[in-house]
Image (tube, rainbow, N blue to C red; front, side, top):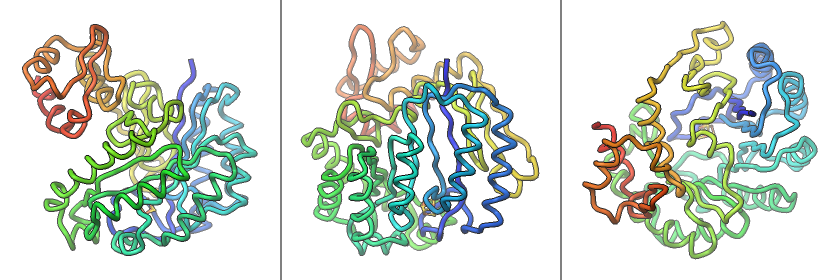
Length: 353
Ligand code: SF4
């Protein structure tokens, strides 16, 4: 049976004010070293059959055509991609070019996940993004016209954002995209925005935006199939579904986290540590931990979890909670829209078993 492949591109043009992901400034020498490191790491999984590919970051679209050629060669030389059903490339509006879009099409990519975040210039400036709304709209048009599936990331609870501006971003993105991921702005204390705003006020500010997205997007054909993900039927991200259902995921690159047969494998967090062969952290879950994690992660999705796979203690907790949080059928248990809004509190209850 095939597995999924994630490749982490740890380079960005500039650090955004809220970002706590690992990335460094684009540097040709470091990109070459990263490609060599990838080639070594990929050889550990030589011959694996890949069903979904996700090139994420960081900003994969900052790689030049020559880098992309080398990256695809590494993938082709080490993996069997003949059964691949989906391939996604993350991109930022500023660095996505027509050449890259054609390259992706020619190399059997099926999706582009674009970091739009907002279509309101003042919000983009607050977030410290390098692009403006016009650049984002151009990039969205480029992907849409190419025939690739366009997924757009949006952020809510941005300081200064209103329901009106949030609706404007959603409406405009919906006209181009076949998949929308909506994330609440979460600020780590050591980021520039975290130092400026703190996170507490934003946490509660997010509720009304999330609720609006849950109301607005399904009305226009974008069903909420996961806590943060909305798409018409058939446009769900299969790569992410593999994570949510504990399928095997090979992860390459610094700070990438994979999952193979119940073992979570976390690569060294920085480019230097990873290049110098730093230790891969192995976290082996017990069968019980796997079962608990399975419920936690799969209830993120609208399909939820088969009842035969739920620990009896967790079923008891579910029956003791308000029933409008759950969709309970003889076969499965999933969260309602309200349950998704209160997901964190529900999972905390499950973790108490
Ligand atoms: S482009 Fe993405 S990964 Fe890079 S700094 Fe901004 S938020 Fe972080």
